[in-house]
Image 1 (spheres, rainbow, N blue to C red):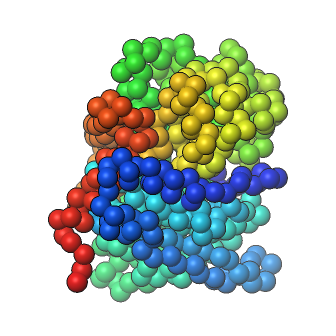
Image 2: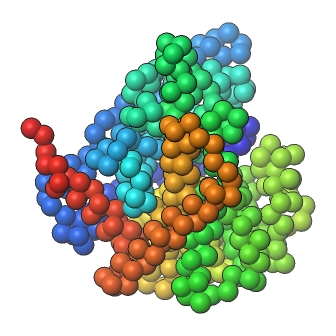
Image 3: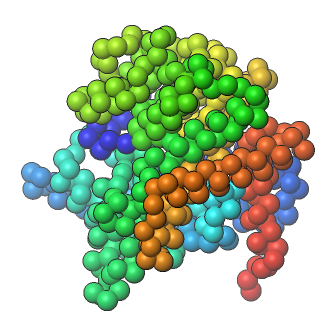
Length: 431
Ligand code: GLU
């Protein structure tokens, strides 16, 4: 997502993501009959770090920032998860997002645990130089709480490859010269020239598209001519829309923090992206579409809805109006549990976040392997590997959902939790 113009909604989204993830976990634990002792472990986060750190502003004054890193669980491997810079960042939202990472990496079969972090801030208020100093000082403050074999951050809302380059450089600079290079994989999502993976930028959006494609195949739905709307036209929303358009589907609506637009005959995805580049990252005022009220957006006529912004966007207030037959969760936690109930009763299908947007962390895993092994992978191979992985995970979720007669989110949770439970059963609890 663009650093230049952050999401600055006048009314920040209601929190409560922690409530949602806990309710989802509770329901899934019953489905798998989760060992009660292991349940106790997974209900809490391993480590929660809150750090206040000072940064010099361009005008010479010092501002204090509040940064977070929550490490939920590492039974399957090092902690993994993004860093989000947003005013809504607080301890509960980071805990929720860290838990979702644990389920996501487990479901994808990656050798990772789950973490999340960020800074409570509005990035639009800071210059690039300030953002660089904030990021570097945050990295320094995190110290050895992150590390290439311990906890590996990545981009999330309002952070990007540039942010990761600053983190990698700062972290590596704190090491002795002979140790620097081998620490490059302390973060993933880096720029290609600095150890980044070809295609990591589109990995999440491509993964969203692939899950929609495999869902459509399974349902015998032809995506050509189908209509979709996207909430959030950042990295995830844009790439998901791009690949859907390539497949012949039509974007009939888009929303960001500033505007909601619609055009029945289809909004050209590349043209809209070009427009945002001239408009501080926003779709507001795009001339080839009609502006609509923010609250009317989810009710637009369409086949597929892709929430690709923040959590808790689909609520009891707007779920009844949703016309799409499929929701593909590009964002983390976009649907509240109550809204999901309404949607499932209406027959709307949901590709859950921990499956739908897992292309990002799968791409991160490839980057981490590439750095660790001193390799450079080709884009074609990467996209093929990503496709294979998503296809496989999607198939497993679908099979579980059919055999147990449960919705896709429940099926995804069943698989994710079982894998972690198995690791604990094998190893036992120290001492
Ligand atoms: N922020 C992304 C997510 O929520 C990517 C995390 C990662 O690659 O570690 O899945």
